[in-house]
Amino acid sequence: MLPRLYIVIPCYNEQEVLPITGPMFLDKLRSLIEKGKVSSDSRVLFVNDGSKDKTWDIITKLSKQDEHYIGISQSRNRGHQNAVLAGLMEAKDCCDITISIDCDGQDDINAMDAMVDAYLDGCEVVYGVRSNRESDTFFKRFTAQAFYKFLSAMGAEVVYNHADYRLISARVLKEFANFKEVNLFLRGLVPLVGFKSTTVSYERAERIAGESHYPLKKMLALAADGITSLSVKPLRLITGFGVIVALISFIGVIWALVTALRGNSVPGWASMTCIVCFVGGVQLISLGIIGEYIGKIYMETKARPRYIISERTWEKDDK
Ligand code: UDP
Ligand code: MG
Image (cartoon, rainbow, N blue to C red; front, side, top):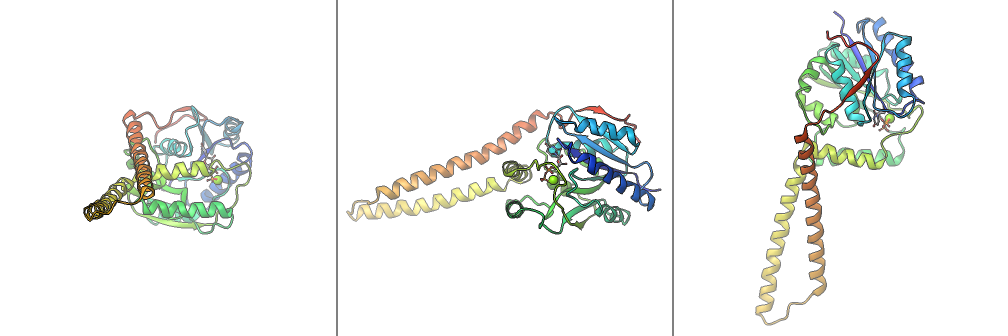
């Protein structure tokens, strides 16, 4: 039997791109159906992430035009990761495979063929990996590269150059549903579920229209979130640094004592001040990092729902 595919697409204030890319996703789905790779009751599932513009109107209009389009709406904006999660959780009981992709046309939809082929060959997770970064500005390329390097140095393992374009089978999603964390960093979490996986490379283009929702500030927040929700290495680094500072100060104390015993006065008001300021700064940063983890614990203990679906263009029928 052919697998039933749901293409999950998060959309936030995308009224400019959706009328262009919506039909592109449907064409792709149709061609996959025609090629006999996926079943004819596959769907394009839009997740409206509490958009403030006409995005939801466009989605409902599309869903009336063709039965392959369906949409759900979040009760408010919850961010990209939660929107993708909402779509995947919605899809997991109705399909065999999901492919999540951004709605701005940056990710090459033609890579879906290779993804589905890999699934048919037995892979349960297929990561879309971008082969070029030429379409990005130098700044975005540089910060993105730094992002991956920093993440892996901090012990958060992610697939290099993979964003949120990936195929996940319903079987993996059912296991993934048991990962209850509120702090979502999907690209770090999916590898933790395991199962056979592979990568498919694709060229990433520029946004067709509209503007990126990931300016530097949000990218930094995502990096910090990714690291602190996947790894405790920063905490260990603080301990390591503390040990080093303690050792150095021990040597300093001995040196000061010896100089004093020799009858020389201890010189250096400036060096004292520098050390006090430096250690003070390091302590504050360390407290901040620890605070970040405490904040995470705080949010996790509340265990608030990770998404709330307020509207659907369809009647959900569990398979
Ligand atoms: N997005 C979302 N909720 C948000 C921000 C973004 O659902 O709060 C969606 C957005 O509509 C797009 C995807 O996430 O489909 C990626 O966003 P964007 O293209 O702005 O990020 P970039 O590709 O520049 O990193
Ligand atoms: Mg984009």
